[in-house]
Length: 522
Image (cartoon, rainbow, N blue to C red):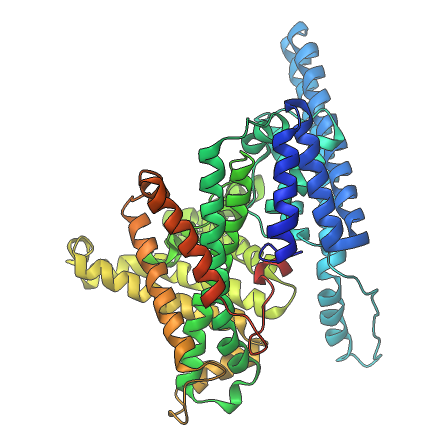
């Protein structure tokens, strides 16, 4: 049941909201949990069992961690200093062991269901080169809906409980609601337990302003998905699936349209997700912040899929670079290569691991590893080349304050991101390299592939509106607040106009392929 489908928008969502709004305060969490489980069951069927198991493991371990902390607080103060240190070490070892069980269990489930076929294919490719000719077979699985999303949220819950920054849930259903809450279970964002649990477990009263703001955001997400993304998908799919038939110009246009499609679709899905959650008074994390105004690749990723980057930075990158093995590695580098490299090498190692994780998280295949390494190489080269650039061009710091140079940085970042998008969308690493080479192929034939001139005009106008809205947000203009201050007739004219735009200009009919949400597969 997709977020843009008729059953979801016109049946499921209204019924859930009515049940949530009409029930007494203490029963509203039950309405959210019931709606979430129904949504997941209707979408994933029997694979719901994996979600139930992940929630059970997370709840049990979180409860155990919390009880160990309470026991430690009650035991340690009455001991002398040597005994206190020893007991703290024992408790710390027990807690680390429980977290390790959670990491192995949750990541083991993720690897088993998502990455096992890729690992087996890679192993068989290696074995095929050996004289024995051995081959390994693996069972076939269907990946549960939102597996990567609820796995990382479960891990963040355990890490936060271990750190003592959040208290564990007392009941299993509370953790299950946190992981299965239907607006974020399919494509995120990665929400923290401490941030959203108050609204989930003690929901606020229905509020007209909150509800209308949520509906506005759902409509905006629908416009981005149906008017822009699904229409662009027709062109993108035709070229990327059979790119050898087309000229370099068509490949270039398809790459640009894929960037537009992915942004309109993913950010549009987030608008629908955050809008639906807002109707229920649940404040989910923002996942996009005008990424194409970024002036560097690292800034782009701080604006794109924000919660994934924040998760990896907090729970992978930072713990890795301050870990004891990495500290020893940094000390070894200082003795061999000097103080500067000794400080930088651990950071680069952590950065490499983080970008590999980003690539692998997106999919099980070498293409996604190359995708992650591409962005690592860009960020690493930017840091390594910075001192040389400053020596070659002493005026560079002054240039960076000028408007023309900032515009150049935005354009440069946009071009680099589009190369990354070509890698991400292509059908394998070899195809990606061949498509990059094909950009030199001379123009032949029409660029109107699968779309007519009217469709392209709709895309151009839709992209211009999207750019205008992002520009307004970049300048701090709150569009929904501005609409809310207008008279009632004008507000309703905007709402009706948005609905009519979706119905009239949305990509429907036999000529269109209603594409599923891309990030739902991750």
